[in-house]
Length: 205
Ligand code: GLN
Image (tube, rainbow, N blue to C red; front, side):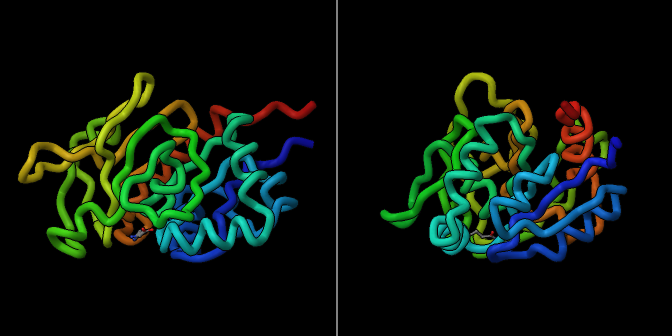
């Protein structure tokens, strides 16, 4: 039997409920993921905003870090927002020395990067792959992407004192934003991710 694709939301810490609601709003079945068994049953995964050091500490403690890395290596579509973006970075700057990441996107992400200038702010951000209307982006102690490797597509930037800062990227089935689209009622980023999940659905054996 072919079932509808299911997207998990990693539910160790962070704004899990808001992502579940945003995914439901774009017509996806969405479930919280707290263990490796639940992870094995999803067709895509959201890493929510929250505190990346806490999420990674809990993932290690609950035996989820290796299954998460293996899932990314196996091509599971994953969308990381804010703390989730940090977790998807191959290189984290200003992380805690013992902080572990999942990795997967060839990018250097600086944690709390905007935080040194302004803790939290909102901005209308051009996001051409979502259409002409900008995205109202909520940044909360947000990271930015300092650099990306080949094969990583820059989807959105914001102007900064020292040039544009990258705030949204895609690398194959992996998507990441510095900001929190789950908080604004504009579900276009979740719809984009739902499309990636539908396109990448592993065909049943
Ligand atoms: N500053 C947080 C971290 O380092 C991220 C903030 C957020 O997810 N809103 O994980």
